[in-house]
Amino acid sequence: MTSSDDRNSPQDDPRNSKAAREGRLMIKFLIEHTAYGGFGAVVFGCLVLFFDVGGIYSLAMASRDAPIFIFLLFFGLFITFGGISMGMGVMGLGSFSDDDRYRDERTRQRDDD
Image (tube, rainbow, N blue to C red):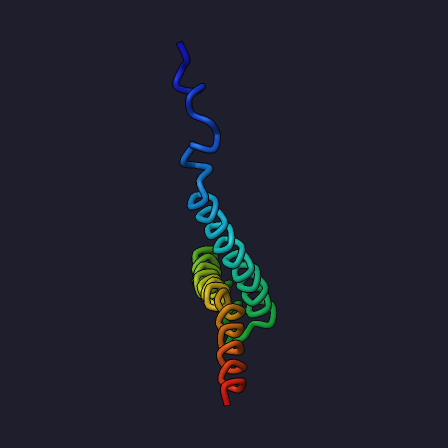
């Protein structure tokens, strides 16, 4: 008797299917771009606090709730910068194929003239 593990080869496993691999690549792509945005948010937030833009650092340190204020500042920056970075990455995905197809159609029209 063969067990169920012997009958199912690694190629038959749904976790190794092409769709699953592409899904993992997409998730990795989105996390990577969100991390780039998060790094930008941390840098921007530190610069804002260091240079005391608009007196934000002074106001935060005068309050007894400074850690909550700093957390909310960086959380908002992370959401904003991460979302922008992720959006730029997603919108930039089709630029090569769209441009190639456009060039092909343009040269085909010139050849017809």
